Length: 155
Image (cartoon, helix red, strand yellow):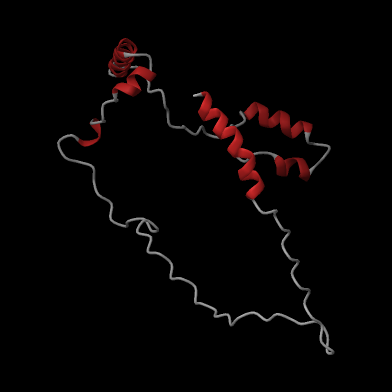
């Protein structure tokens, strides 16, 4: 082993001496200037291509045909949650509790006299003045004349 190290150590300087020295690359010649001015490089011929046709988008317009979602199931069916969705929502115990609360809420809606959570708006009639209020308004407007009487609501 000592012999191998000696041969490698002696051979290394010999190899380093055999390598020729590196030369620096020659600089590129500067563009020659003629009597008319500097030499100008021209580009090759360029062709203009027409724009590509627009791809056909099948979902651009809404389908004018409305399909009824009837049938024996109708709107009552919904896809059950995946195990991942159940685990993210608190597990099967919380899922069961939420289902029970939802069923109880549906049962409460069937009790007579219970109003829905979402109520439609009911417009009330405009307020009307009693005869006594009209007389008082006319006495208060006596000094102002027609301007006050025009603002008075008509019965």
